[in-house]
Length: 97
Image (tube, one colour):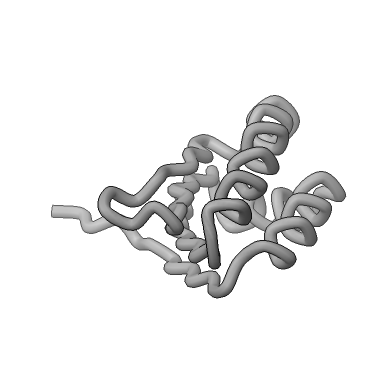
């Protein structure tokens, strides 16, 4: 398994609403068309109305590469880049105890 947490910071409420609209349209397509995408869940950040966080799990790094290679993902990211002030991606490795 391969997981990522991605934080998006937005400049204002208008950009946040436009971001949420992009997400509403993109996420169902991603989940329907990407069998290697196991979890793809956008979140609001409590106490930070202009922040969004995605938690993403993929079967493996190849599944993530396939996600990144999709034209729908590229279109989504182009739209996102026009709206955000910053993006921070964290690659996650599960702790095994």
